[in-house]
Image (cartoon, rainbow, N blue to C red; front, top):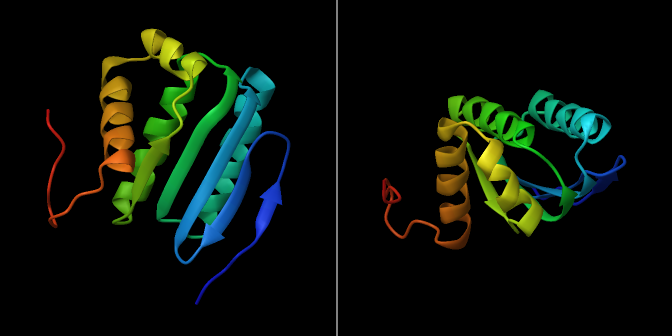
Length: 128
């Protein structure tokens, strides 16, 4: 069954196609922006989201706290047998990686790598 709907709350917008949720994030992710994003992610998780693609191309400003939220989301959907993929890593997002913890940086690398190079073989893992 296909669900096509868009919900917009401030910065994050979500589109669900089949079982994949596309979370499009735009604007500044300061305290208020991160709270909005965290709330939207929590809504998606409470709604049973397992497959999540986050488009970060519209992020104009953020810091390392974004990656803590993404890592948390990654762990939660992974625990459900799902995944988080990242796309559109804008310059502000890449610059903020300098402030992120190493484990969060590695998660971002893997999630972004899979978004542009989906596995051709089941069980295929990205390079270390």
